[in-house]
Image (spheres, rainbow, N blue to C red):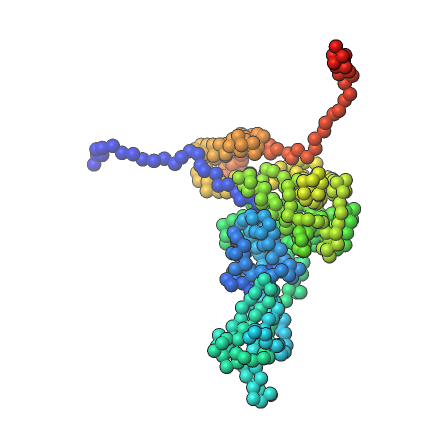
Length: 479
């Protein structure tokens, strides 16, 4: 039958919308008091948090940062830098990592007994003396008592209920199990780092900053993090922040020696030394530097083209892990920098700032693409965006329209970055000499992208010269 009328059809747009990669998203490995969380996530699954309340709800919180290292990251990222999102991987499984605490008598104060936050609520057994001292009376949770956690006081509270016959008891006999992280070793942390690959499938987010405060100074952990950071999910590029151990490397010269001895020389690593303090709280430099990098990226539309160096950290002193204060001069800080180590500096009345533009591969690697932190991150971020943008084009017929769509989409996006001065210049090419017939027959298509991110202007040189010609102004004044 013949068609009679006016018809309209649609064709796919020849230019796609770029799927821009995430930037400044930390993935932190450590331990958190999940036994105290009100809505704990699944064990062995990374937890995505976009606020302080969400992090505490899913992982709990404690001021005991040596035991619960993820609490340091939570506090720094949300309280000090107001950045988000943050991905946390908690290695503590209360069902597997626990130790028994023998029953003992506890005095009751205002109908309550305060146990350590380490106590696992489900394991608590409460008894009161009976008429026969040899046969105490067991109390029932929900009928005689309730259990709740108070993170601000770092305690687990057993509270007698007003309708219980034991409400006025003066002593409670309590046995319980507590979480025990003492068995966690460097090898366990190294294995946990691989869980970053779950972020894409479980959360739909690919982090680009890997940290493990308290553990990253271990050579095994650092090596695994450095190997994983540029190949997250086997595809995506990121950086790992490494804290050089301050318990054995107490001077800046020892930190320089340790960097080489421990093989912290990878372009995926950003070396940090020493620790820092704000008030009474001690932070690993990697913790705050990752927060600062997220803050700087966010201020630049999520684009990592600017170095965190010479930007303010939330601190008031440098220190070692044991709290010993460290004093660094500008010259000493520059020696650390010249050996590929980032530090902090209080100079020129600008307050405490991060100090250093180099990744750990400097000075052995002289490729600016690898050794400058913002340049290296830009290469990774552009590559990550290209992967996400063109993934939907995979397995489509290799025709001219497909090549043109990819070329135009990437070209327009790159031109936008150049126009906003996030790149000094950029272009994409599809060259015949880079695409031999054998590869095209095998379905392999190669594009060549050229980009030039701006290097950090880390040195200004001014030349001063005495110009004798200006002496003639004396005679002009006299006249």
